Length: 425
Image 1 (cartoon, helix red, strand yellow):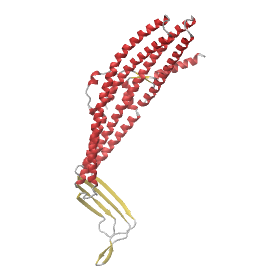
Image 2 (tube, helix red, strand yellow):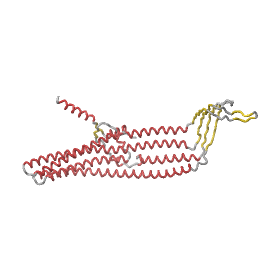
Image 3 (cartoon, helix red, strand yellow):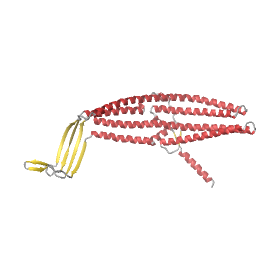
């Protein structure tokens, strides 16, 4: 019976490991696009804008209005005739009007409103692209930080293994009376420090995994797998600023202001309209309750306190401002791409440099171990050599994954992070 709790524990651990799925970055991208709450919200907002476009397009259609009302009191106006005064209307009556009206021509005002609604939806879609590009870069950094931290944990575990080997030598020398208690305490202290570093690294991994699960909308435990192949040719491909949503957004903002300006300018011109319909009014003093009509008209505003003129001038100033913002956005994007290329080149160079540092640190540790065996150096020198190897390994790991993150930064600067998921938004 005592074996049952152990069996249950083993079953739980096996089940836990089965739940923990291996995720390539492509898997992470696709999971994010399908489950992230912000992405879902922006997609819903984009869908809502489609109905606003249809609403604007409805302005081009004729308008059919029905107005029904019942009058409960009327002062009964009268007509003067040679025969005397007679009532013109009854005191209580039902009244209604059915009107079909249509604006024949309005110098592009309705078309401009439709264009504004369409551009507004395009801007919403671009904000969605920007959100995806930015968040996938953040997710990519976390993704590779988790992988690098797991590698770092392995380095610390190797460091602990080396220190425990040193401790065996120290304990043996201490039993033989060849060294003092101080060296025993020093190696024990360093072992304790390494254990703390392992625990700290495990905590950082756990926190980053929770953050990653939150961002991609997953409840399952994630095991990131390095699956991104760096494409050097793609890195060197020139930047097209229009690939960045930020630049497109500023350009769309200029267009929407230009459409608003067209809409305002149309107010200076007349509107041609036509309407037809039927009036109905219950009136016992009239021969017919129905009245049919057909109307053609022209409507033009002659004066409105210069409000239309001032609105036009304001929009022209706003367009000038948006042009400057657009140019500034291009400058920012070009600078970010240039910085990303520099970071990538530096991180790539660091990989070989740090790789050479590992060889030197390994050789140094072997030398220091030999010297310590011959009692030529204190334990502190051997500990320093061990920590130096750890530092060299850490630098190499960081250079590798800094290079991966720098590659992601190049993709981000080009607005192409979503390509890593094989999905083109």
